[in-house]
Length: 167
Image 1 (cartoon, rainbow, N blue to C red):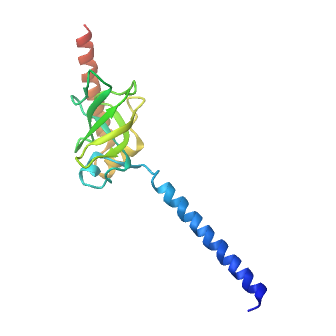
Image 2 (tube, rainbow, N blue to C red; image 1 turned 90 degrees about the horizontal axis):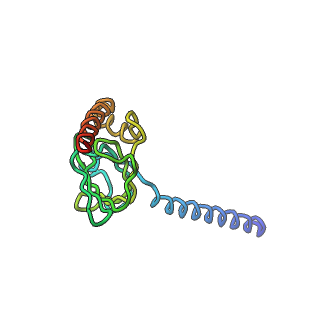
């Protein structure tokens, strides 16, 4: 092999190696930023990773919202009406957050089985269900329409309870 040709070969191999290293480092950096969605059924089955950022969603279970009167700490249960997931959050909840409503929480699943939420996202109208929640329900063999009917029933009960308390 001629020296010029050998030099071009080494240069080409070097560039390919650098490109491979750059792609590998980029993929490694992006791996830690991916938030996968899990339903309470999947979390109960052990499919969700511990102490890693995930998204979980479902409906806020009626009668489970507990607020600490001395701080912004809130505990509540997220359910898909099959399994429940305890969520602990410290901060101001969205205005649309209430029992019987759909939510998606972003946080880390703890070894004890509860989720430490960094962010709580509430749905924006009665007919909306986050796409991830609807898909997870369908994969579990349940119809999202059934849960929307349950959510509407719970919402009506909660509205009646609030109106009775304000009178």
